[in-house]
Image 1 (tube, rainbow, N blue to C red):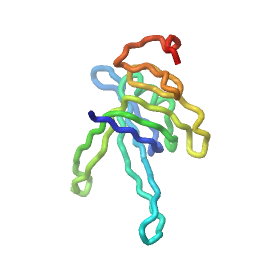
Image 2 (tube, rainbow, N blue to C red; image 1 turned 135 degrees about the vertical axis):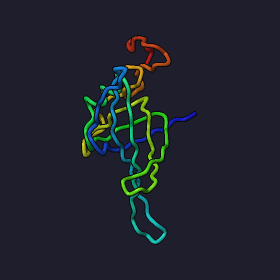
Image 3 (cartoon, rainbow, N blue to C red; image 1 turned 60 degrees about the horizontal axis):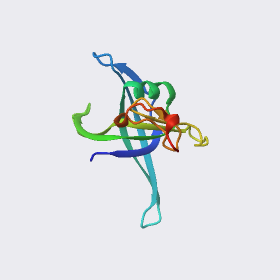
Image 4 (spheres, rainbow, N blue to C red; image 1 turned 60 degrees about the vertical axis):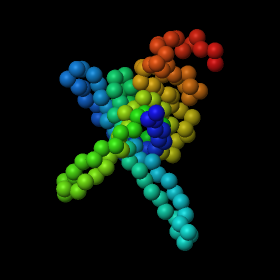
Length: 145
């Protein structure tokens, strides 16, 4: 099983483009930070950056509603790749193929707003009422919860 969940802030506004097949693709980056104290009592913060790619309706939703600095929950499949940077150094990139996204709000705002969006084209509230592509597009109103 290959699944990753990241909560972080968008590092840049999403950029949408179209594949030759006509399918939409949106790319953006997410930074996830953690603070910790060293054994010497020094406060430190480390940040991991993830490149995120969304396809289809989920790509269109991300492009329409997400903005730089906004806190977001992303879930998907993790891919790592190596590449050469401009200086010829080998770098590693952590890429996420998005399957679910949830807007948690902007920096400094309440996280009570937003909704969950899944790659199956469905959406729902934060209680998990979204439609999953594995189960079809059943009407969300018919769910017993």
